Length: 121
Image (cartoon, rainbow, N blue to C red; front, side, top):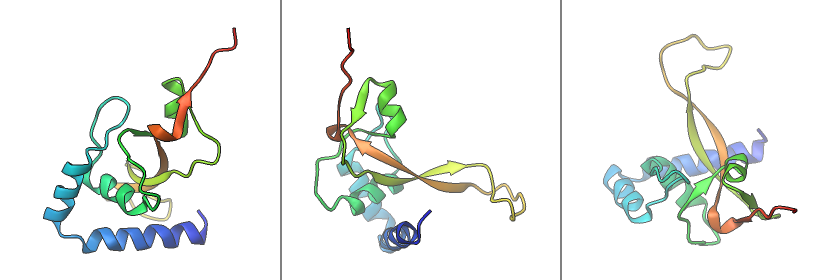
């Protein structure tokens, strides 16, 4: 991961940490962002997306690049995604197993940033 991306994540995480829990819950209930299966994202991930949404697009359904392809949709060229935290049970190699949950960051795109795949028949 690039230093620029690490700095961006750090700043957003700090914004999120400074947000009181009740404000985080209020914001996520107002946003109502879901994945294509209809499962609501965690309040943390909804807030992460909110803080990254500098273009103020209306965000409703988000998924990763390959996940959208499974739903017969293609991310539009030039679209900029949003980073969310995805849990992983795998610790970094130099750390001991402690039963803690580890996170990595994944890029997701809103459905408005996609278009239907058309078959060539």
